[in-house]
Image (cartoon, rainbow, N blue to C red; front, side, top):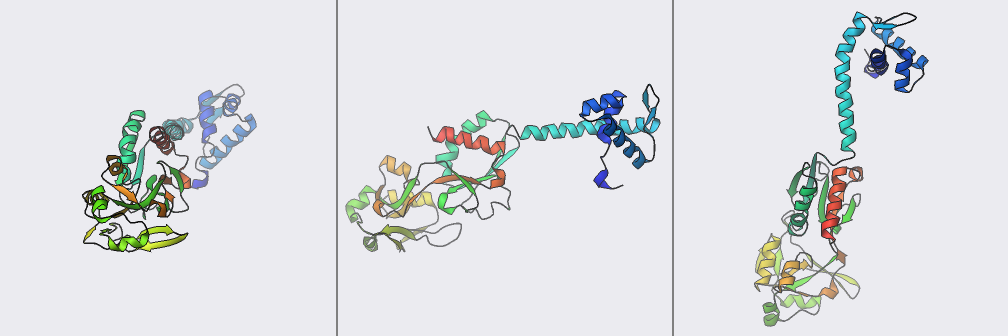
Amino acid sequence: MSTNHLFDGLPEFLAIAKRLSVRQAAHDLGKTPGAVSQSLQRLEQRLGVPLFQRTTRRMALTEAGAELLARVEPAAHVIASGLEDAAQSAREPSGTLRLLVERLALPHVLEPVLPVFRQAWPNLRLDITVSNRHDDFVSEGYDAGISIGSYIAQDMIAVRIAKAFSWAVFGSPDYFRRKGRPRAVGDLVTHECIVFRRPEKGDIYRWEFLENGESVRFDPAGAITVNDGELMRSLAALGQGLIYSSTFHTSRELAAGTLEPALLECSPGRDGLFLYFPKSARNQPKLRAFIEICAQVLNR
């Protein structure tokens, strides 16, 4: 039997079996009695057996009709329930929200947002992967990611979830007292720099600036090379050298006074932390709920 017509006539059959009346079944289905009757006839022809005994006054199930009803009716309830659950999931957040998150977003985004989100949606599960590699975002089936805006693919929808920040050079007050503060990009050659090797790619991160309207790149040199941003900032706060970072990454150290910026006027531009996701996911209730909580908590 062709699967293309497997369910043809079954809704009409079930409606007639419930009412034992073509006219009343047609009313329930919002169809004409003629259309319902024709659907039933096609079903009976396809099966090769009559499903109802018909007289001018009444209808009754045949033995074959009663057996079909006993098997199909429970399945119809299961299908209806599944469709209702699917429709409900389109209205209410449900299931598991899978996030791919840069480590720098943990203290600034996830730590303040997650308690509020869990309280608002206790039945929604979270699966969070912390990584600075976002190459496999689509193939790994993530619903959304959190990353610096300049790193996000152009075909993604991006929603800013943190204030804009600037890239600059940072050092401790003690370091600047001992070594002086660089006033131009060229001054950096005389300073001790802490070199950062990107863990996701293994290359040395080059420092980028905008000086006199032109883009300038600087290859840092120093006795210390690290592949962890938190360690890099801690070493800079201890006066071990200058680092290239952002006002967002160093916000806690700036507030505590353990780091100070230099060459802010040479920042290559303003950037930010964004929640991003593919266009196909933008209407997911679980994702919309997370975006709303982020806006509520982070924009206070």
